Length: 453
Image (cartoon, rainbow, N blue to C red; front, side, top):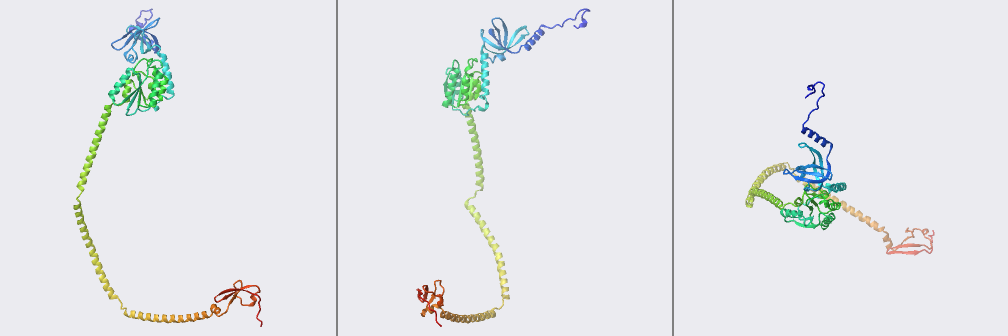
């Protein structure tokens, strides 16, 4: 209806909406004005539908409200609620349009009091992360072939049986060492840290599994304690944390070198199945066999090729002998022609030399005469020189002072070795030397007398 259809003088009628439109509009108002919030209360009338959705009433002493938790969210809950449980739900207020009922659409559920634990969990996580305990750089790689696996858990835990079953199935050759410790209860965190420290100090295993089964946040709280986190960080052995279910996260998961969603998964990550090792070894053996076969085939082919090239020694020697004889014949032929030519040229030159050679007999006679005359002249000159030399030698002998001394004369020298020829050179009380024919003597001068004219 539009305003033109109304009678004159009457006011326009308001628009009419359906009940479903009203409920949808109210639902949108609720969703826009009331964000997600944590609501605490007690569960009653709990029903789990065949579809997997949860329906229940959340109440306290003064009021109640209907609530629904759809399967996609319910599957991540860590416990199954029961009537009378005190819980806290993270929910969005909505209106179920089909019935016009106010209800809570639950996103998450936890036991009452878990909120404080979760806040403590976040504070510790933020602290340790700031210290670098969660950094990927400090995470160590797991050994490729682990021979011994250490397990820190309770001997009565179902997780231990799952781990042992998995290890027995995947790697029966691996040795297992259990470091028993309670995994929940009073002082459980300190005892877990002691077990981890003991394993680190003994250093008798290659990988250490820190495990327990699923449970509530209270059940898993021992693995959120700071002492456990710091002990894992300082452990000398690579640590795999397998605490709770896939949706459970603890501080130990963040500090460990590797986080496994479940204890069974931790055992699977710690070892490689023996069947895989055997299969890989068989594959490598096949590769080596094929490579060796290819190598042997190539060597055999090369051997065949070399055998075709190989000739018996006698045949090779005979072949070389034929080649040598051929070369010898060629060499003789090559040498014979130059020798013949050289011999002919030499004969021709000798004939020409004989024709041009002068008669040397007259020259030879002339040279013989000259030689005779030269020899006679040299002999005469030599005789003359010898006679003159003998005369000079006789004169020198006559003038030799030694001969004079031998006739009885003496030669006088003063103290300076000068020959004394005059009495004026002598002085009384001086010493002179007399040189005689057969020696010398020193004589003192008593007095000096000059020769009177």
